[in-house]
Length: 143
Image (cartoon, rainbow, N blue to C red; front, side, top):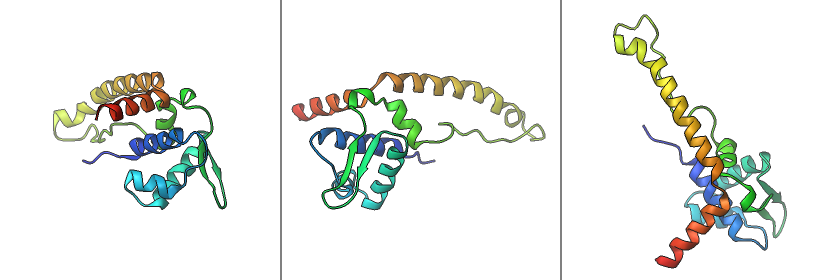
């Protein structure tokens, strides 16, 4: 099963806005960097704007800017803006399923997955967009 790239794309988009400290960045520029269609980027920016992470300026010379400094944006905020539902899905096979594992594995996995989700959220709360930008800049210096 394929995972979603929305979260990574949202961080990439916000990161580009953070790099452009002195002005708006348009969706075409971001789309070239993300390697996607500008419409996809505009939708992503719309989602980030609805969650108070980005401001949009319309018209000529318009684009998007971060709504607050990168030091004040956590990856948890970005994640909650673009992802919905649990990270891991558990099939509901029910008590009438013929296999003992199938009948009982769901509740067991729910506990494990809930712990993993809490740990991930805690980690994402500790990492800011500024941390990501610094790491990107360090990688750029090395290679």
